[in-house]
Length: 262
Ligand code: PGA
Image (cartoon, rainbow, N blue to C red; front, side, top):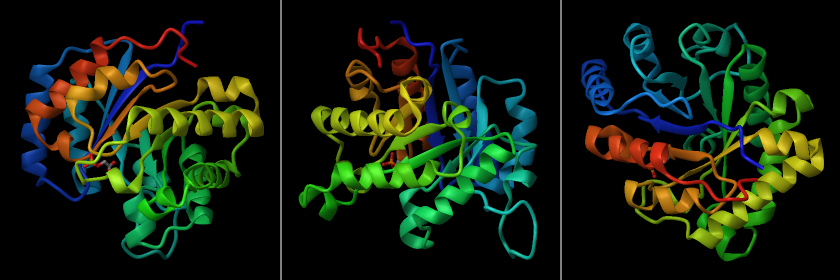
């Protein structure tokens, strides 16, 4: 069966680039790539840049995403930005990135509330799940991925779940140059789809888009797309330079999917 899921490439700029530098990078990317109806490209810059980039992306080939949101829509939360406030600027929101879990104490419960806030405000959450090195070495990867994902989805209805994006991001692969091996990735994608299918049915599971993140480079993107069940990539470091991000986007746009892309 042919998949109707759109491919997705997400660039997470994290706390990098000034507004001006990001503006230049967007302009270069716009020159380098052509729009493709089958592939969405989402840039997640610093929140302070969103207002000015929004005017630029309206004429470009990208969508914008937030790197983080608060779980409440408004209130006394100094320094935070709510999904309700940011929804005017972005279509997507990354939720539960391991850097937020590690450095800002985000628990599975907080992630669930943020996922709910994203959906409530019309944003597509990109939910990050993944094991750390010790969990992998102790053979707990499947349990960790299952538990993080099941917890993150708990406040959504089955219909809402079909629209979410799940990014498998093993913590040991983020920013390290280490890449999940094809077998490791296949196993994790299988756990993600099985978890959704067991909890919410095969229909929801078949509609959810699943990404891989962790030291993504252009040279393995096409091969990984062929593994089956994977819809794209969440890119950190390599999204900060026009040549490397362009190469990744083009590889996803032209890559072949597995025959059984489920
Ligand atoms: P990386 O980051 O591509 O630099 O490993 C990925 C991420 O944190 O999403």
